Length: 114
Ligand code: FES
Image 1 (cartoon, rainbow, N blue to C red):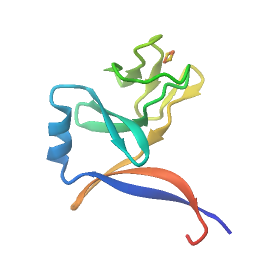
Image 2: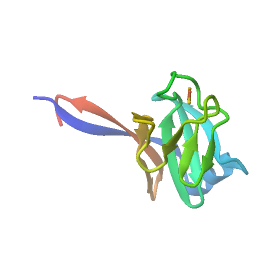
Image 3: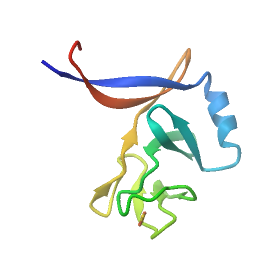
Image 4: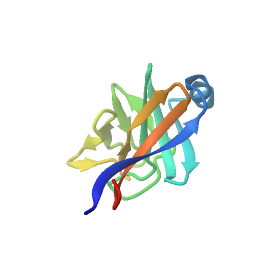
């Protein structure tokens, strides 16, 4: 029987390293084995999305954060940073967690072994 799991992957050693990676930007592109990830920052909150707008599957590079929404640079569709929802579509969102040993993003998957 397959079980739904979240696979976590460390992306930075510390929260400070993540903040440094952003510099003065609200959104930054990051690549790992999950693919291209669009990291977004709204104040002290951090988010991670697949770098693919669900409207026309274009890259989110150049997107901005506006009042808790991530706004695609192509046609200005806005998606909630909290849920990924907007215009009856969803951005693929990855959870982020901060642990003593690093910053991790998660991706849902399936496991035969739990
Ligand atoms: S491709 Fe993102 S709004 Fe159209």
